[in-house]
Structures are given as C-alpha cells and as structure tokens.
Image 1 (spheres, rainbow, N blue to C red):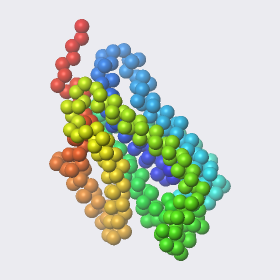
Image 2 (cartoon, rainbow, N blue to C red):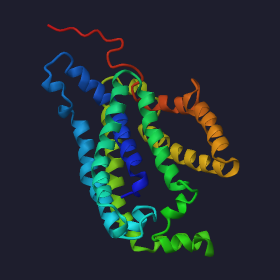
Image 3 (cartoon, rainbow, N blue to C red):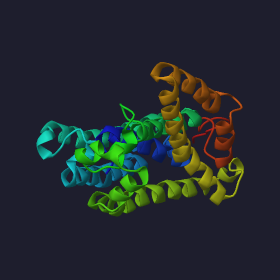
Length: 292
C-alpha cells in the first residue's frame, strides 16, 4: 500500500523488525532443536518466518496492487500518469519483490540474532525504514513529500500555486487517502499487533525479565521510537542537510552524525536498546548443553 519506489525498503524493514521482535523466541527455537534432525531445523519449520512471509503475501502485496490499480499515478509517485504508463513486468516485480524483500530482511536479522549480534539486527530495521522515509520525504529530486501528498501529475505541477496546508487538505479529502486509511488500518494494525505480541511473548520466556530494565509499556514505546521514530527523524534531517549543503557535503555530514548516534559504544541509541530486553549475545553463551 506504499508507493512503489519505497515498497521494497518497507518490506525489508518489516521482515527485519519481525525477526528482532521475535529474537528471544528464535534463539529459544534454535536451542530447542540443537543437534536434532535436519527436518526440524529447516527454515520451513520456523513459524515466525512463515508468518512473516504470509504477512507480506496476504497483506503487503494485495494492498499495494490495489493502490496501483486504484491510482497508478500516486502509486508510482507520479512517474506514470495512468495504467498505460506502467510496464506489466513492474507489477510482477513488485508482487514477487515485496515477498522476497520481507523474507530477506527476516533471514538477515535472524542470522544476526542467532550469532549474538542483536543490535546489528536492529540496525537492519533502522536502515530500511530510514530509506523508506527518505524516499517519501525527499525522493530523488527533493519533491518526495509532494509526490506523497498529491494524487496526480497535475496536482504535483500545481503544488507551488497553493499553500502547503491547502495541498495537504486536498490530499486528505481524496479517494486515495480514504483507501490508504482503510488499508492502512488493516496492514499497519496487523503489523504492530504482531510486533508487540512477539515482544510480549519473548519477555514471558525464562530469564527475559532479567534483561528488560523498564516496564513493558515503556519498553514498547522505546522500541517503536527506535524502529520508526528514529529513521523518520533521520530522513527529515538528511533531507534538510542535502537542501542546505548539497548532496555530497550533506550526505557526508549525515554519515558522521549517524555514526555517532548509532555506532558509538556509548551512543544514546545503544543505551535505549539495552533497556528493551532483546538478547545481546549468542543463544549458547554461558550455557552448558548436556545430552543423554
């Protein structure tokens, strides 16, 4: 249900977020089948992976195709004026690519979680959502937010003729926004319920509360801010830097800031990540597994 240029980033980020939300369960599941038969350790036996694929195939793809049919101009960020401007292969690529991106995001984040690199799994989600918001906020020519908030090429051309408020109001009263509202309630609602539910489920496992340092409601709020709020702020920030200093200098400055915020050992994001209670180490660290 998102515009084509940003759809794969959203799918990858959602897959990664699902894996991070279920990080403790994935580690428990991997430990429970340690050294068992190949069949029980196959990816197809992983319920969290299968549910992620189902979410992409049953919700992300159909709603995206609906928006492409309902308003091809909006769905392509006004690159295509109508259905005739969309290559048939693009539809196929969108449908298959969305599922593959969600699957890839989950598998990469899961692999990092299982080797004890949970924070880097989280960064998969942050990076993908940052690219999603960067496309929607700035785009490739600085008009991303205009392309998001207009429903046709004509409305995009006429944007400078009216105030921002009036342009936004025109979009909010359009059939395209109504469709997004209805579809978004289903897609985003299911997505958030799944992520929160898997976090809650993970905290219920033995030893989980030893890592969670804040109440559950606060932990959920921190997780949401880290996965969605931080990338959005970053996208707005990089857009402002690019507008003020140009692409080269703007991106260089943003890279330095992002490194300080995300990668420094005592960065605020690392500190907040540590409060949520997502595993920080390998599932076998400190454990002595014995078999009879």
